[in-house]
Image (cartoon, rainbow, N blue to C red; front, side, top):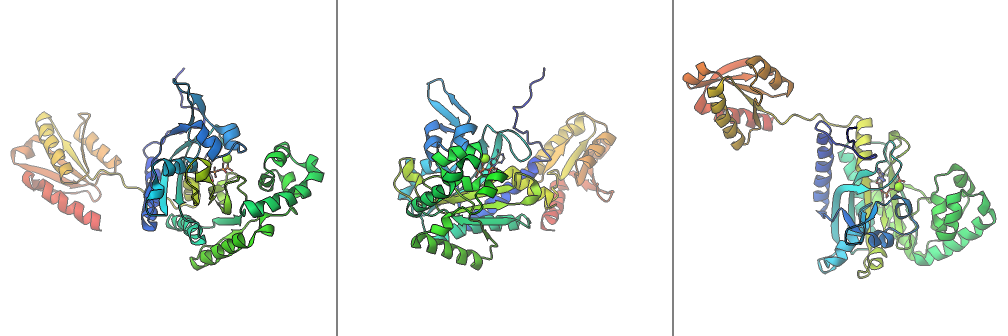
Length: 425
Ligand code: ATP
Ligand code: MG
């Protein structure tokens, strides 16, 4: 049987890869405008990094990691997300000695053993940012405003930005007590996962997607009810800043990040049109994380955006631009002598910065012109024996169907002029 790609993975082929490049280019442009620099970390890390940095009680660590022993008997895990790795890199490379805050972004594949379905893959891609070394609400506002700007730049509309505050260890302890008080008498009415969460991480019950749990917890105390003065004023200031930046948001008290090192701001961006997997971006403040993985205490905040889901949103909303094929000129050479000349000219054109190609299959004039047309080439430069003897070539504008004779030694400059016009047009 022929070998197939692993379940939950994708081949991104020409025709689609341009869409990815467009998304990546737009991301890089926005990050540059906001002063974020790219970081690249390994595809795999010590398993312990994710156990500590993502948390033993999460679905990711419990169920979704690709973990194996390497030949040196080390436990290795393919990265399921990048926040923990970026924090590790920050501590390991002493980025805390750089001017703070350090504003980073990344783009790349992540790996999770999940049930593949629309919008859910085993190898998927995330764009994310992390800001380390700053704890003020203006940082949270900048991070959310960056996603907002990106979506606007992509032409997306109707997105919902949900924000919440999960407080700090002080206010959360109080919340946990109140929540347990509320939930304990009815624990048997919760789903099995939530019964487990009751022991390990009760706050996550507020975030359960199971409708019966949702109905049951509708009146449960939320973290917002219990914020300490410091967390409260942080959340209020964040909202003032978001308003000032024109970011439209909704406060969602049920949006939680359950781990100890999460502090204050949590947020998510949803787009209903792409189906059940409607979250295209999730993020939050994680002031305890760098210390958790062995670095100096450092505040941090970031988000990760699912690129497959962002692309789906762009497609659903018909916002994907048309992409031009790279080819601008094609040398159509007839016969061996002409092909040798043509090969020299195609090199000269490329050297002059003009995307150009030459027939590689020894086809007839008709077939070569047909190929040029199919590939959306603008100009065909026809080199036949007769023209060559005269030191000329025929330059045909394939779009309008007109042609002219051009002296061979003028070919590069003539095409360069036309190409330049095209670029500026
Ligand atoms: P979900 O609730 O959809 O499983 P999550 O909470 O696991 O999401 P995060 O870990 O916060 O997601 O990752 C951030 C973003 O990455 C998500 O909002 C989503 O857009 C995307 N994402 C997460 N898991 C996958 C996956 N298996 N396939 C495709 N995209 C994903
Ligand atoms: Mg998930």
